[in-house]
Structure formats: structure tokens, C-alpha cells
Image (tube, rainbow, N blue to C red):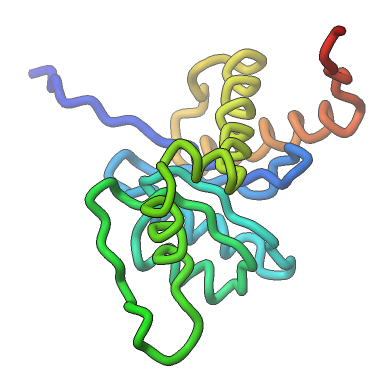
Amino acid sequence: GYSKHREWMKAHVSIDADGEIRAVKLTDNSVDDAAAGEALLQQQQSETIDEVDADGAYDKQKFYAACQRQQVARIVIPPRRDGKIWFHGNLKGEPHPRDENLRAIRKTTRKRWKHESGYHKRSGVEITMFRTKTIFGEKLYSRSISNQETELMLMAKALNLMLFNGMPDSYAVT
């Protein structure tokens, strides 16, 4: 009979500071965001990455290790609310980026840390996904996984071309 268990695919997107899509990854719903984030970082091996801004789903040791392998200069990921320090200050070497984020949150507040760290830049990916769904629709039309991956990459290429040809200038009206 008909199964009520629904499967879906997740699109993971990496953008640069200008909003250009740099990497895309299509996974099934069982893959966690941190594993997909590792794949996004691997797609950008030839380039240096200045900063990674991600949501709390990426707060895992394997993703931080992938960022350190890529020599990411700055990692802005909010730790869990009940997060613990991974490496205490009495260890030799540089402090872990997650621990620094956690210490900064403890000194002020989570809201203030997000403002001071520039965490709001992460919303650029949400805007990119909104643009994708608005222009191309909410679903992929291909049936096979490999064709869906190609379709997603073509969408990313088309959005990058639209971005390259010109985005409207937004400014505050005074």
C-alpha cells in the first residue's frame, strides 16, 4: 500500500560576501547540516575562505575541523545554549574558535554577540533560497538524484548570472 513516510531532499548553499553562490550540495533528509557543510567547504578547495557564518546546526566538532583544514580565518557559529567549553585555557596553542564565541556570549548576551560578530550576514543564504524559490518554484522537476543535482547547479548558475548582470541598489530614504 501507500507509505505515509515522506522523503525529501535538502539543498545546502554557500555564498560569498557579495551574494554569489559558490557551492551547492543536494542531500537527503538524513544528512546533517554539518556533514553537508564539510562538502560545501571541499568544493572551494582552491580558494581561501575569510569567514564562515552558519547557524547552530553547524556547531559540531567535525565542521570546525573541516573549517580548520580549509584554514578559515573566522568562524561565526552560535554554540548551543547549554554549550560547554571544548578546550580550556590551560592548554598550549591557540584557543578554539567555538570556545571564543562561547566566552564572548557569556561576557555579554547572545543577542549582543550576534550583533557584534556580524552573525546577521548568515541571512544572505536565506535570501538566496527565497530568491531561488520565487524564481524557479518550490520543487525540483527532475526525478533522478543526479538530474536533480544538475538542476540545482543550473539554478545556481542562473541566479549568479542575474546577480552579475545587476541587482537593484537599496538605500534608506531620508
